[in-house]
Length: 181
Image (cartoon, rainbow, N blue to C red; front, side, top):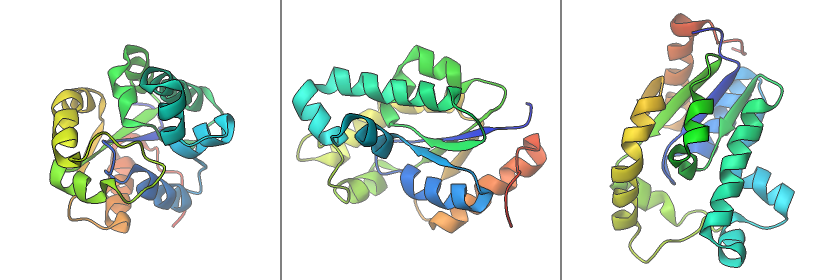
């Protein structure tokens, strides 16, 4: 692997991509390109509003476009895409780039469900997030496993501990660590 100039944080809703992304980007002194705020800035509506107004398929197309645009943008950067992008073959191919470090923030459905309602912008998919997220894990986890160059189990870790593990994994693996203290 060549020097990583993009670090992509993957995981299901509630895995902590945005939280970890902010801490990691600050630590590395790299910009953060976070899916939901980027889409909201471009479209003028939250992803929840977009899902309700234009439908799930159109919202997912915007999420996939976000990842592809973020990976095509000037580097370095930390990218936190929507979980859906793992279902798109073009996105999986883009994640396989030699200069992309892909970190899967893996969490149990119980952890994800406990965090699910904390963000009002997040689309809701039924009254039982644990069942929904377990189904999503069954579908998406094999793809996350396939593209991830690193896996961090986040259930019992603080954001700082997750970032420390990510940074440690970068130093010996690919000389991609180019950040701050």
